[in-house]
Length: 261
Ligand code: NDP
Image 1 (spheres, rainbow, N blue to C red):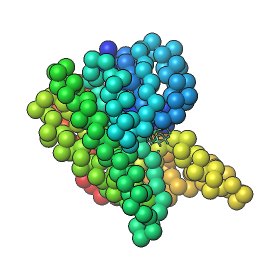
Image 2: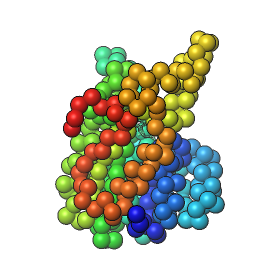
Image 3: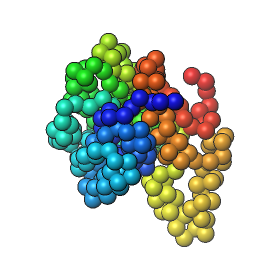
């Protein structure tokens, strides 16, 4: 299938590692030029150089915290002539109880998971409109629908992101801008490996055994996804070949979701 993505321009937030990096590489492999954003400038520069070498596309890296107004302004400022695709991917898990978490913690996750998407839509959608259309994708989580007990703030803010995605889709489809959300399940990223290393330290359990148990306990497929498996969906949804997919939320979770939606 020709995805018709060559020479499009995409912003990928959190494009330096994990799912975001896999999406960036997947888009680059289709000939998409990239603007990558994350906070750690060194890590970002390293992947920027690697993607340029591997795929020969233009890659601009922007060291920015997407949860802040300044960070979003910096990304918007680095976009020269507008973009065709915005991948709102930056995000992270949480761990708290509702009764003990202070307001500041709720606000920080709201800013990271929701306001970053709001502000980036305001900053970049007008340029998409001028280019005749575009695509905005939100990386939410299965937790937007099926909560994990230890991370209520994550669950709530990802649910809000999915609803934001739906509302934005309705607002922008008249401008030929397609907005959709993706809800991944277990994806084996460095973040999960770090958690596994921390939780197994001194226990005698290996990181592999720990991760396998999580997969066995949750995902009927019995394994984590590789980030590249998630990236393939993002690349397809970014393509004009997905032209009738609007305001949708696609689960990619190895069968973990317990209800049909
Ligand atoms: P990683 O922790 O591996 O990567 C997160 C990326 O986001 C990094 O590039 C990080 O770079 C960047 N980032 C984090 N916070 C900010 C910020 N404030 N401003 C700018 N960039 C930021 O995460 P994953 O790849 O695992 O997850 C990516 C997305 O997918 C997240 O939104 C997550 O919630 C979602 N997801 C992940 C699942 C999984 O199992 N892994 C499952 C379901 C959803 P830096 O630290 O340098 O800023």
